[in-house]
Length: 224
Image 1 (tube, rainbow, N blue to C red):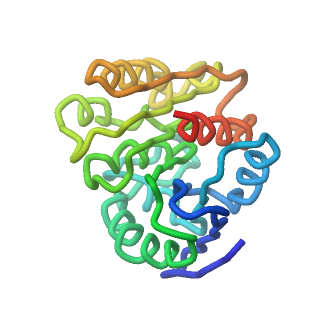
Image 2 (spheres, rainbow, N blue to C red):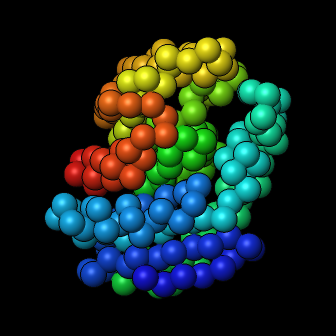
């Protein structure tokens, strides 16, 4: 592993063994990139590079626009996704790829929770990522479904993975209740546009089995 600090973000790079292997960018809440990578390696996945970014300002960097707190003790989302995507594309990506054995054959973008929302949002702002994995993605985010239905990606991705915990919509929080309905509708929308998609339901709530769910999403896009 190679670890860099770029504009206060920690970038952990797990290079592929062979040139021209795919590269997946994973935005993380903590520093779980190593755990996800080791989980995939233990399962015997194909050769790829993982670039895991952590120390994010989560409710800012991953949020496409501002929304108020969704619960009493929550913080607002402050809509910094465009600025973070610029940092990712112009600074993190070129610096990280200096440490890979060759130019990636394709690039994926993945994330859990708000980072799963960001992964979907990014395809409307850049054509760099051709495979998307949104694990327990925050697709309940106000007005996001309408945004997807009314905008066109800069380049249609080759494939998209969606997952959700079986209990994630079983909540009294009115912001979160639509998450399953929205995720299914968004996945169906992309499928109807000829994009290869899948939607998996995993046992448990939003906070259970995040490592395993993240690894499953990356494995799916690696195997397409």
